[in-house]
Image (cartoon, rainbow, N blue to C red; front, top):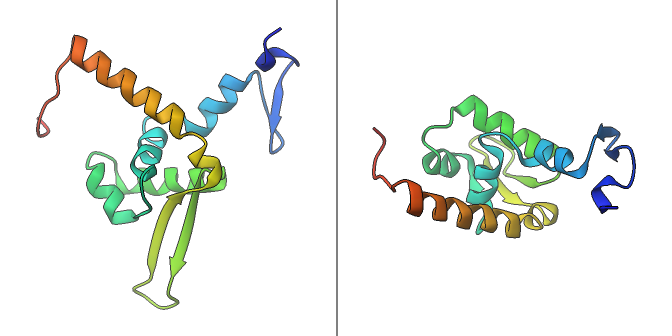
Length: 125
């Protein structure tokens, strides 16, 4: 039997999932979580740096996704300074860094799909 199917379900932090794929997709699924992790994979960044690299994400969505990634332990948030303007930097946690090989596989697959079936386009239109 496959490891991910040993029990009737899996649990993480008190939450039950039907399988490990479901757990993984809860942590990194959706339109923006993996994209955020991708942009943090090489270096820590401030909120505005992430916004510039993902111009189509809304501020509210980026903020909510960062909070969720931080809550789930994939991203760390460090605050520098006590009075405004404070500096907030986001980085992958050790747990988040363990996802880098998956991000690289997703990127390679996406590049292959676009090369074979689509096109790379400059600018939004």
